[in-house]
Amino acid sequence: MRITQVSARFPRVTRHAAAVVLAALAGAGLVGVSAQPASATPPAIPSKATAQSQLNALTVAAQGSTAGYSRDLFPHWITISGSCNTREQVLKRDGTSVVVDSSCAATSGRWYSPYDGATWTAASDVDIDHVVPLAEAWRSGTNSWTTSRRQSFANDLTRPQLIAVTDNVNQSKGDQDPSTWQPSLSSYRCTYSKMWITVKYNWSLTLQSSEKGALQSMLNTCSS
Image (tube, rainbow, N blue to C red; front, top):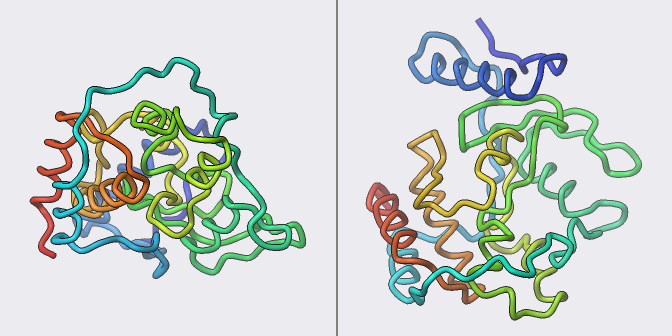
């Protein structure tokens, strides 16, 4: 028995719920999965030891205000190469057998969402998540940056800041930090913590004490 994409005719929340159930059945060995995770992953995910050093070096501070925040202050998605923008680049990187048209829009492919274990075959079911959300970044120090620097942050392809995931999952995450939101697939929380830590470290962002505690708990689950 093979899992295929949940029909796009159903509402997104229904499709997501079905995908979660199917993923759970697959994990229990009750059904087979038709698409495995792509080999491509966000770049520069550090080792556990490196992430621990980076976490120790981060500045703990009270959470800043969202006053003045707007997504427009983080211009995205920008053109990366030819007609391809940042979203399209990540879809190609994180997907399997991705086919694009002349405008670089993905017309077919498979995308595995490591946050929830669901697999999709339509790019419209996939969002590109900012691992450290833009509003969270604003509260952590980007409010004092230039728009140009915020643009670089919002389109960062050199660090593990962007990842293709199930659209509903990205929307439910919103601007939450790890103290209130973590991937439902617990086996991915180690990787998620390392991605979050290294993004904040490389961009010199602060973190809250509750956020640091949650990251440490997730990092403790890593074997390497």
